[in-house]
Length: 248
Image (cartoon, rainbow, N blue to C red; front, side):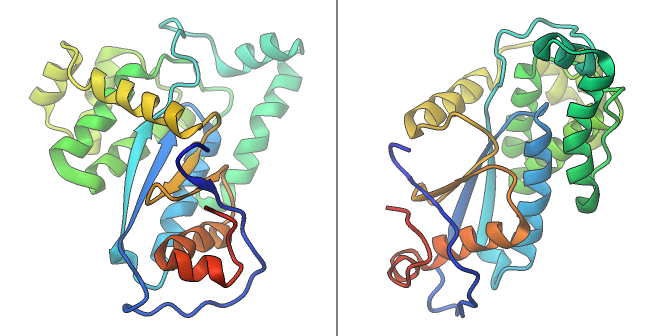
């Protein structure tokens, strides 16, 4: 990455973290709402934070990253899209989709691979940004979680305006403000700025977790590895000196 070093977890060794050692940690996570590994990564990051030495010192901001910005509205079922992409039948495509579903089950994630439909996620990302503006990090996380569930478990079309309006309300967004955003270009620039920042940081795959714009981790790693990233960011140069991280 151009501005943040790639974190590579070191040997699993206990690290004692005290309040004197620990600095505030700001984690930015680049995600797309139709990416199953982003859903899994979000859940695991939340567990890692809860199990960390001082979870109140960690804040998480979710950033937009569209896997296919040119995706037309009203897409096919995901298994049909996978079959076309890989040149396979629906049964083989279902097996591909099931891989993420199987990985996510221990994390309490339900995925109905036959129900999922393709979607252009630009407007959904705008509502995730609205969540941050309206209610801070907690509401943003709740909106993102609700959209994940709607896509992966319920087969909702996340590029349908009425669907977004309803699901946004269920997540806690103000109904009138949501309608106003969806009828305008509000937060469009926020989405574009997130994607521009990803390009500047050299992010090419998601989920990507960037702590304090200093260390980064890509992929839905285990809770233990997520915890190592948090510790690396908390102790920063001390942690690197101990040989736990190759971030620079």
